[in-house]
Image 1 (cartoon, rainbow, N blue to C red):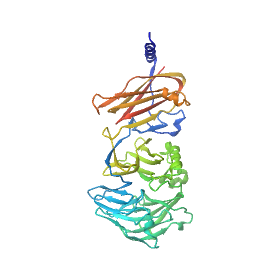
Image 2 (tube, rainbow, N blue to C red):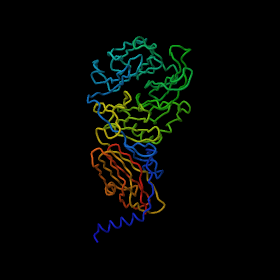
Image 3 (cartoon, one colour):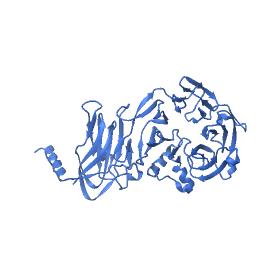
Image 4 (cartoon, one colour):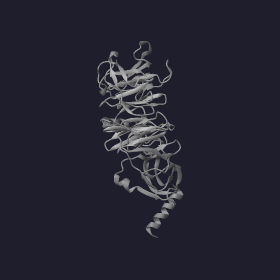
Length: 482
């Protein structure tokens, strides 16, 4: 009998003796502590380009290139019957057949008011676009301050708010005005408020003026100031609602509404405005954000100075994305809203934006891309997940695995089972095997639901899967225990 025949017979004997048990998939998402801890199999230390729907792991959406034109930022213009992007280039701004030439940075702030998009960047005059042409907005301050220094703009109750991130004040205009005088509102009058204005936004609560009537101001030192009312110039219609010390915001773009709450990314993690009002600094961080808190804080520590931080809820409400700039590109933390599960993804996205129901992004090379489900995407996706470490009550052997993986078109699956927290890279390579699958007809569905012999012996185990393909779903995983 040859060695290969003997080995095959031994594998067959082990499989007959093995009892098949479910190996939990990480359907509760990413958890940094699962890297070393032996805990619930429902959490994963690495979950890249997978998303949990609560029942299975689904490979993240792919993307298609909508336009090869290279822009550094895109602003949705959805006023009227023909939604289009305002494209920001280093030397001009364009929309449809309209353009305006001057220097622009890649982090233009914008707001919609009175059928106009008003945008400010701190390198030139405040601009506006009405679907017909670009104009300088011709605002003038009551202090003589140059409007060219404004690099933030927000619309609240049909009133424009402008600010300069080097000043502890904001400027407000008349109702519906897209030009004309703006009046300075100093914030240092509050006494113990410090820093400069980083961002201004709004928060939805049920108060005297109905929904969405709270103006939220964040300063560079982590002060959150809230005002209620319609007119900052009317003491009878403008009231300080609260001021709370939280943590310094990372970027004016890393702020977004989440349901009826407002989330913003700080140097201490994701902060909930609603929780902060109730608990102050004790609200750090939100309970939803805790599974990725340590990972996110490490990214903030190493990449805070880089451009590209952004929070972006997808327009259909299914996901909440945090865009993170890294030294060689970008990555994302993605929350599946229904499953309340985090994962990471590696879209090459420098800026996220929605238009006409689609979730799009500006590629790091400037092209405009749109997320696309199914196999009709421009390139394959490689998705990786590690199970958490599991400890068995006695020394055991995992004789084989039976994964159920369904994909569209060609698919490659790399499988590794580790039996020691301290296994070397060489051990990992030796324990890895790859299965390649190809449908009879290109684009047809393929499925892996076969016995994969592993013969891994020990008391602690971790399985690792790297799958390359399109529209892949990881349905279940069984382990044959001896």
